[in-house]
Length: 425
Image (cartoon, rainbow, N blue to C red; front, side, top):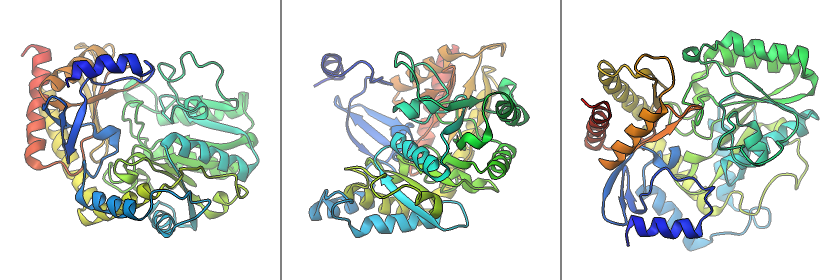
């Protein structure tokens, strides 16, 4: 079986709307390495889009899943509940930022977590409107893609979006938008189009994911917290991509001096199994009536077992500090490459959630062509990278936090060689 054969079969069997970053078909994986169906080895600097922060097939996580599978795989927590669901909720209630009583629900995907956060905020405030940011990504469901601040490919061709969703600019100094501009846009919105007494929630990614790995300035978070407190608005932190040690803290909001009322999470939560969660202030989380929240697969026993093991691994292997160490090494190597590569106009990100933004050599315009060429060249050399950003000109680095030092060094060499090859050095 070859990658080409599988690609042809996929074209016949799978809807074209499921986009593909590569045509490499995985057969097995271990920690930071993946082997395809042809036996080719790749270093994984995508981690399933920040999902396997603890590495592929971590033995502790596999053991927890196997033990759970031998007991039962599904009962539906709403029908026959189980203790591990409660234990994981207790642990998240303790670990999610915020010095207040919390409660948690489990669902299956990040988009579903966002949907439920909006439902809960509306139930708690009896208000309909939600404010989000340009460049944000919150999922592909109708509410998720309405909140998402990018049209193509997420909204294009899908008709009318959900009502009562408003977008304001996200502060990006490189693009000429300041924190003052972003907060001022909300003030103008309240003056011209939206009564703040109608706003249920403001949702923000502490570091924009698909939007380009732009960290939210501390001043923005403080300003949003003040606005929410002033007007009785619920602040929602979308930590789907930033959660579980990726940013050098268990949650990115740990790095700010304010906290959100509701936190959504998924991706790294269960080490590769589909599990998502919403954790928030207990009084807010209890606003929905019994039966208003949940789902058949929400909090599946296998995902719950994996997530409890993930939290153990993060603590036992000190992965928050490991993220900071790896991120520092990556930034140093990128800065070295930048000295002879003027197209790299910014290197940013907390912990091991790092990105390099590429413009044309004169700095006048985004350079998605070079970003994609570097991604493709690296893939041909055995390194899996992802691009992102509203203009597609950002290379993002999301290797497992457990990547071995020698493999990390090998990946850095491939990255540098790939950039040099694209530049013709």
